[in-house]
Amino acid sequence: MGHLDARHDNEAALYARTIVNWHAGMGMEEWQRRFGQELGRHQDERLSRYRHAVERFHNSDISDPAVQHAIAREQIAGSMEWAFGVTVPEQLPGFNRTRPCLGDVARKLEQLAALPAKVGHWSAGRIVVKYSGHEELFAKARQVYARDTGADAQGAGGTSFLLSCSLERSDCDGDGEVHLLSPEILGVSPAPLGRQSDLLEQVRCGDLEILDVTGSSSS
Image (cartoon, rainbow, N blue to C red; front, side, top):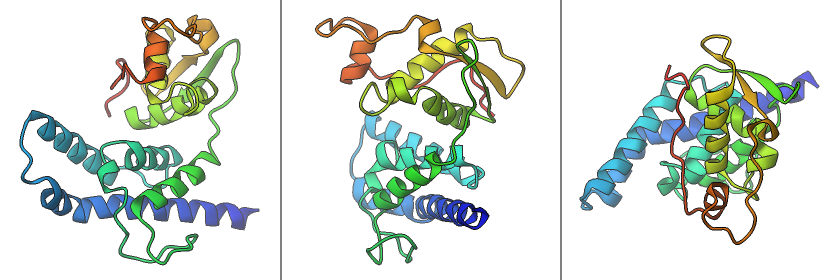
């Protein structure tokens, strides 16, 4: 079993490193080739978010499953998504195609990073989460609230909403540790169908996007 776990960890780290290294080494050049002629504030904001994500991941612990999951999501549906179809320059194990695209690698990484994820168990509607930085906190919150905010429910906006509410009401035991609260304790339930003004219904339909949460560590 230990051999299988080691192979799993090595593959996940390889996929994460492949994604990050491509963006750190080739991303800006390819971005300029594709979007260099496009001007405007929106384009500047996209480029700023992209640069920040690449730098953050480049300086992160690639072996951490929470970081790996965050990298995968950023490639699939975040600031790195524009390069989803770019083929990687090297051969990778676990793929039928000789040179898979970054999106393929990210989807495989997302599956691998989710397998060992264990964040604990609910106790009286609370769960203690240890983290080192916003990305890891959000990744673990996604795991904690997966049943309520998965892709078939509310998505990333729902996770951000529950995390934000939880941080406002939970007892923090110091930097790097927080008590996340269950949706039931927070008083959150799915909005009735047809009530477009409900916050969770807007999040569910994609009409409202929560970009960030407050109260988390920026380290």
